[in-house]
Image 1 (cartoon, rainbow, N blue to C red):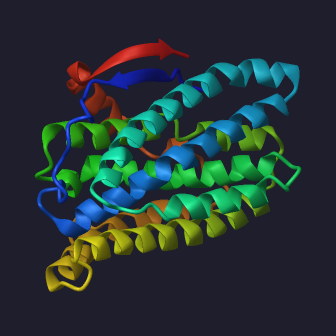
Image 2: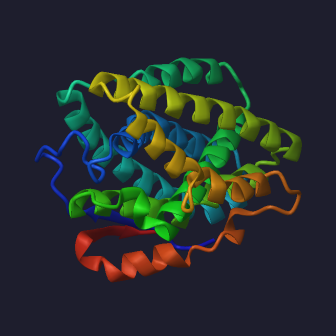
Length: 274
């Protein structure tokens, strides 16, 4: 296990930003807005799941996991807070967050599952998604090219911390005795919901802007997903790796996250270390 640092990002999200803040690109702005709309409620799920999961461990296991879980919770709580501020700006611009409501409905179903390993497995699967997306953003900064510096800092900082804590829920699930069969099954379920939900919310954001049916929007989407630096093109193999018997999140190289955090120490303050 590694020490996790909880950081406070030193940017001002009370100041409004442009509707097409991501380099003037309607699609990229709408897509990242959609991702942000899922974060506050989604990250609360992750926090709740690992807290419940660590309580299910033996005393000896719990002592080993608690510092890492504390760091994980601190980082996710900070992400939740700052994306709530970001989303408040989106709400003022007239966007409607329908993804959050769908997550809340699924959480009510999840509450009926007595085994806490289910929520931890869902968290581990989603954390793999965010970790490979984070790695893609750090490798291909074109994803937020042209955005103002404070918003680039927001997304890169978030990506770095997702890379840092990518193994916590996965290791916790295994320590709880979670089955490999259900780990893979729940990744398939998470994949379906995540990809369809983010596309639905992106389309809704674009419709609100009057940009959904424009050729430039579809061209941007094709480049973003399948171009030289395309998300699908570069993330499919890392996603597929999750289904291997010997998979572990630490197999993903996290050096780019370390490098960004070292280069941008002025962008954040350290709150605590686990």
